[in-house]
Image (tube, rainbow, N blue to C red; front, top):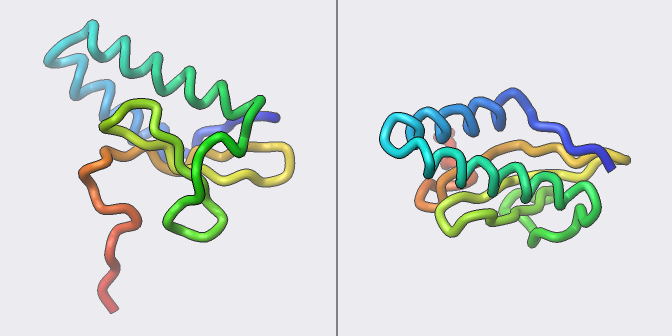
Length: 95
């Protein structure tokens, strides 16, 4: 199975990288490796995570502070969001 990051998820990952890299470069490397390993694992085990808050999605927690939100479509795992666990997901929308 292929694993693909959406542009939004790539931006999330970059923002996390930049945050850590500016403060603790070694931590940036370690946490980014956790994200890579988690995503790679989904290629072989796409149902590894638990059911997501949004129907049709799944969530995996590669680090206690971050979760990957993804969906499986045909032969591809789409990483949709990489978000801090303290942030509300999905976000509330005003009507």
